[in-house]
Image (tube, rainbow, N blue to C red; front, side, top):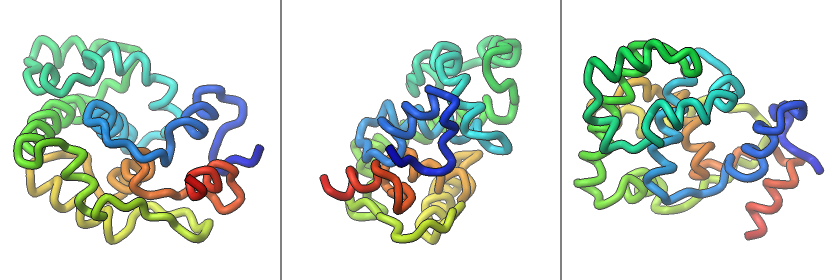
Amino acid sequence: MNRCRWVNMNNPLYIKYHDEEWGVPSYDDNYLFEMLILESFQAGLSWECILNKRKAFYKAFDCFNYEIISKYDDVKINELLNNKDIIRNKLKIKAAIKNAIVFINIREEYKTFSNYIWSFTDGKVIVNCDDNLKTSSELSDIISKDLKKRGMSFVGTTIIYSYLQAIGIINDHELSCDFRKKEIDV
């Protein structure tokens, strides 16, 4: 089976993520929020590092429940800062709280966050037709700017591009990847 070159074939979590999640269009707000938080924690790190800590993040961040996270206080922040199983970056933790609040506000405005994020492409998946590794696009620039205007942090264009790949708005599977063929044939 051919997979994208970036997949670490020695890491079963990475293989499973590539095969079952990455690039698969998602409309579930819970998953969309989880990926937004994980992508923001990735800033300056590898995705594999975040993926290896995903279960610990899930537990530490109350199953990525945005309603609960939006109410985190200093006690919870200190608990997270002392959790050796996650990335203990105070700025990223505070951003997760702020981003949960903005996420809720966007849900109130658009009924769902999914409606908001998919509105940028009129519900269509963007399929890239080359193997050039991209880290941003005009679309990620626009969404990043809008999210920042709304008050989110750690949502620069590179993070948002990775996010759009993760949630399936952008299909960047390499041309030789069997999963690209599967997604396009659907």
